Amino acid sequence: MEIPIIRIGNSKGILLSKVLMERYKFGNKIELTMRRNHLELKPVKAPREGWAAQFKKMHAEGADQLFIDRVLEDEYFDEWE
Image (cartoon, rainbow, N blue to C red; front, side, top):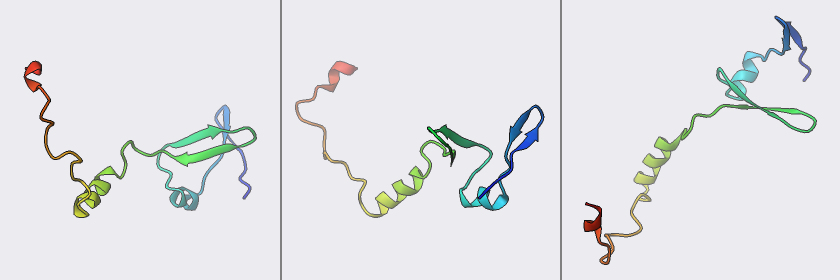
C-alpha cells in the first residue's frame, strides 16, 4: 500500500484511513519504532491492560490459590512491630 506524504504546517506527515485505524486498534497515540530500514507503528497499550479479565478467569478456574497455605512456623513477625 502506498500512502502519499503530505505537508502539515512546516512538517510533513501521512494520513491513516479509518479502516487502518480500526484494524490495528490505533487510538489517539501510536508507538513508533525506528528500525534499520523502516518504521514500525504499533498501538499504545495501557499498562496492565487486560489484567482484570485475566484475574477473573483465574478465579473462575480456581487458579488463584496461594502456593503456601500458611505462614512459615519459623517466621518472627514481632520484630516488625
